[in-house]
Length: 356
Image (cartoon, rainbow, N blue to C red):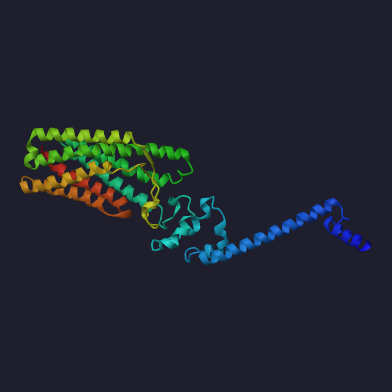
């Protein structure tokens, strides 16, 4: 019927796409503009949502006004250290972990955190240690009249400590950019190898010095030549074993200050350390410090030469206390304690090797 044909025509028209009188290129442009508009709207909603979330999740801190005023910036990936250097320079020791965590996540290298102190202070301290040790070795030259294996070990260790403190000082003064300068990195690394080798070899040998001083000061068991030879052999064996262990290790690498407090002075030091620190590396230093202290006490009881005994006790206590202080203080006090030990042995050497 006519009514059925009209109904069918209406349905067919609904199914078939409407014929357009516009040019096909214009239709494509129109569709792209609609898509762009929808995308822009979606991005605007996302940014608005991120800004709202950032406003409530950003930790309050008076040290980082940039983060508070523009929380959306935290969404941007940080590819360069310069992006985070300004707020991180304002980190303080009294910041809580919750306050510091969001800022630390933005740090590519924890060593980049500025402690807020003058960069010259830390290396200057090591330069002063170097100067003090140079004075000690210069005085040893005049103090040692009768050279022995013990006096040689004393001079050798003092020279090793001079190199140790000198390289740390020079590295912190002139090698600040080793992160971005591979040539400087390699130079400082090769200069640092003798720091560990001379120190590790010399420290056990200085036990021979302690034994000779103890013999001079009247310590009973050190009067035996067999004991003296045994100490020499043990010292050499310990030095060799230490270097064999190091040769099998991954070596040394630049020290990264990722554990000390944000305001720690040691963050301004540029130096190398063991890739795999091991307690075995510090055993010779502990043995030497305790030997000085115990032999000094025994010499004081013997009463033959109380002056030598007192300086040996001073040497032992200096090394033990300097290396026992906690935290970031130990970085500086440990080397100061070693310089104090060498000074105490210098004063003892004036008597022992000047009058043997």
